[in-house]
Image (cartoon, rainbow, N blue to C red; front, side, top):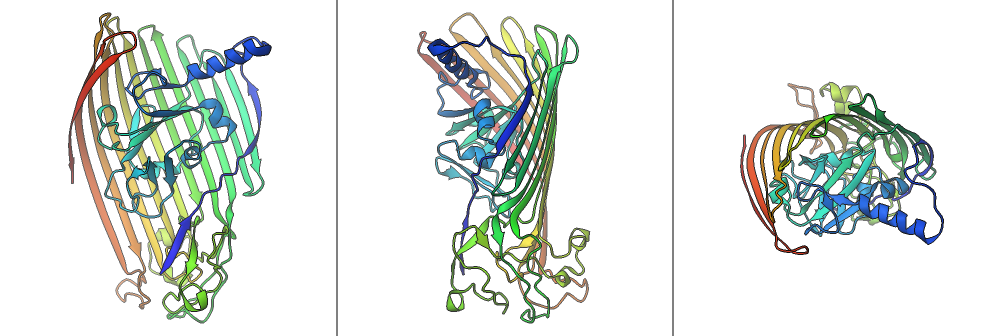
Amino acid sequence: MMKLCGFFSGSVVVASVLALVPPSYAQQSGAASEVQRASRVIDEITTTARRRTESLQSVPVSAYGVSKEDLEKNSLTDLEKIATSVPNLNISRGTSGSGPTLHIRGVGTDGGSAGFDPAVSIVIDGVSYARGRWVQQGYLDLQQVEVLKGPQALYFGKNNSAGLVSMTTADPGEQFEAYIRAGYEMEENERLLEGVISGPISETLGGRIALRYMNSDGYVKNDARPIIGEDPLGFVIPGAESSKLPNEADYNGRLTLLWSPSEVFQAKLKLAASRNTDSSRYSTLQQTECFGPNGNPQPIFGVNSSADDCKLNFRQALADLPDEMMAGEPDYFIKDGGQQWSKYKSRTATLQLDYFAEQFDFTSISAYTRYDNAYMGNSEFTAQGQVGVYENQDFETISQEFRAITKFAGPVNFLVGLYYQETDFFFRNSARIAPVPADPATGRFWSYEKDSNTDGDTKSVFAEMTWDLSDTLELAGGARYTEEKKD
């Protein structure tokens, strides 16, 4: 029996900036300058809560916006850090199953089950990413983040009963822009390098490239040491390869192309890739109470350890697994021995087409998304190194949305849309849960291996009517029908 606690380091990276950005306004002094700057910031906080760009202050939705300036000033480079600046948004990086959990106003879905879609989803550039694992990648060159609180099923589908986190990435502008940002944080020995090049390629085509690299030793001290002579099968518990956790590296890149051949049509293509590695999925968990002999961690399969002091003090003892335990395992185990690791990578492609007619706007969003996530680690969270676990996920989606909104001069207007999505989700989980000899047929010490594959097919149609009763009063109503099948 043990009591676990997770924690998050809120250190801010101190950054220096080299930028080539044309000034957007003349320098002024005094109160007039402050008012103008405040007005400009307010104008930038918009929302797409109703699938159209509106002022955040005028939308009848409980929403919270984080501007580009705040994201950069506070070095909010991933969703866990962003959550620390948004009231009532909590994000925790989970271990198994669907992984990280997102809660808005205390409502969310347990990330321990791989079979459930979350109650809070992530939306990037209008595309829904309805799996918790998308939290793990870094997010760079964001224009803004908005958190919509409460059910959002009408505009964004079924996986938003508690709300959603919507992110808009930056597009190329009409003028050339470039910057390089570097940072160093001393406590975690975190190194950060980020760069953007953006501007017109031709009269009708603009491009933007954003890249970022981050590497960090970590903020948790790992005290695990080798243990000899206690393992029931004679294994040597190796201690820890990493003395600090989570020992993380993050690589992100995005290419945006914006083609505007006329005033009534534009096409926008975004291609992005991300890769994240760390030393253990369990690296930010530690025991806060011990129930074994003399207040030490309890024995695991007869192996004792007193390395963990069972206090919430950013120190833990998390041992790697014995090399011999990996005998007979597939290649993904053999190449790493018993060393713990976690690896995540993603690829996304989004094509948005917009047509602006006199009476209506039409939007088409086509998207392909995929992530691969795997980890191998010590799931009893201690220095004993006895309960190994391996998990692998591969999630792939193809989606298409068509949406039209009218712009009639009268008080009544309409929004109609169609949505289709295909998903393919592979999930594997295996673990060692008993100190028994190797299986004579396979030579493996693993107790079980569980594989599953889920294919999904989703179709939906939605519509909304808005009626402007006066300059300050609007009546709106809508409905969405969804049919989903999973095998």
